[in-house]
Length: 153
Image 1 (tube, rainbow, N blue to C red):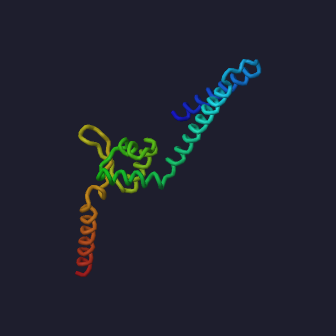
Image 2: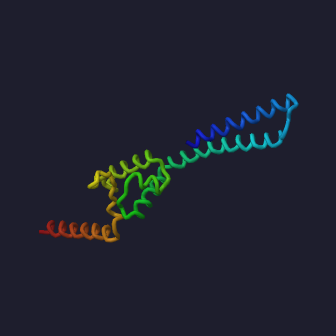
Image 3: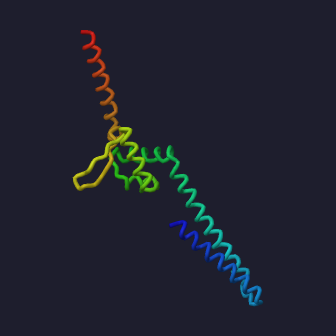
């Protein structure tokens, strides 16, 4: 959308500048300074909008930064999120958020579930409460102890 409005502003700026140059050539130059200032404003705004679109896309595709932003948002929401929530919270494109969530699921950082209303959401167990991680670690230590005891027999 930024690219479209940027191109539109650029077009109007160039058209305004061309009209002012034509008016100067014809000798009909009423408020030419104002016309050139407005044309310059439109051209500059259009170029900046188009450039900001490219920068925003490049920033969003910076995977480590995107991953960190998604994980921070998931932690703030206590480990239960939808792709739309994450996209809205982080400002990242929905496509990128969905791709990153699939990758998180493949790495077992989270699990994909379907709620009662049919809404697809992602569960990050480590972010649900502070006790979850401790419980997991305690269970692992207990299992290791049982393993070592069974090996000694």
